[in-house]
Length: 408
Image (cartoon, rainbow, N blue to C red; front, top):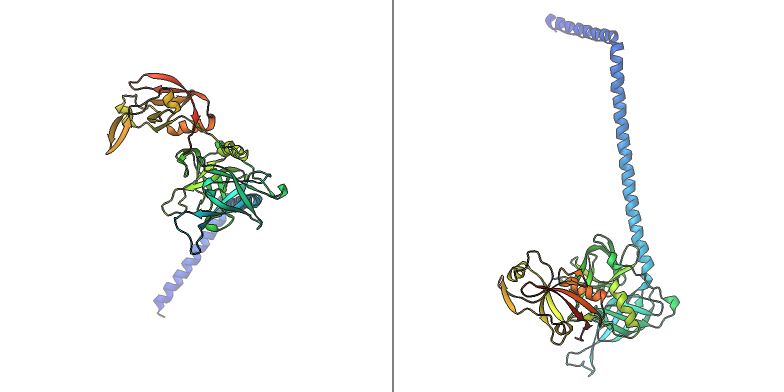
């Protein structure tokens, strides 16, 4: 190594030593002044560590709480299933097939159908849909424990798509399901369906109340069912007649119908409200036919185009009478049907008839309101007062004595 490089190296080493010495001296001289600041930094570091530890603890506790919540939720579903399962039945139906032909042995043709139902009382009554047992030659109910019994159809109501079966079993073998209040349901509440979709017996699906107050046409009559419950719990062929339950295991509806292009659940299922069943089922058990009050009209809710054509105030709500059945209650009371035609988007729309805006003082905002009021609050023979807007805009109250729905 050259002398110059040795000298340079020595100078650098000495400089480093001197620098360390100066730093040490400054540190010693300023130790008392720097100590508080170092303590503050240390304390801040400790606090940060404590905060991180606390955050970690909160996250851990939150995760534990979430897990506890899920475990509780799962257990609640398990409890509902296990508690209600003995009350749910699979319904096997043999129907005579009227195709105009016979089988190769010369006898009639038969087909098998299936659905679901549930125990109504300890007298052996089972509730299901009318369309499940329609035209049944033989009916058998199968319980979750494997037991089965022949059943007799003792009453049906096509208008509400309800039927009552009777089995001959000891009361101790029958566990009725508790019933809830379908009028108290709110969108977002938990729903549980138990039934036999596609023959997969005693299947449970869950969802929520997607909508309330729907009015849908009965699949077996020309009348509509009001206050129907819409749910996204999977409802498929074979679920018909089974219970729709709330989180307490109470029946709030009887699963009856789906809207689907594929023929299976698309997330839009419907259940007959239990409050209608509570009206209808006791009458069927008594061996009588349930009679609904009948006004004798067809109608539509008002549209903006009809409101304008009839010179009604903007925003008017009510049921426009489209047709009045000859010799029906409405006709006897002098209600008037629509006789003029309006073209809307290429479609002919009747207008010009009486508009019902209230029944017994309760506002009628559309046809659904009128159907619901008649089903829930009236019986044949009752007299009701309808508030009308007549042609020309005059308002008038008219009394109508309600009749009974005619047979289809």
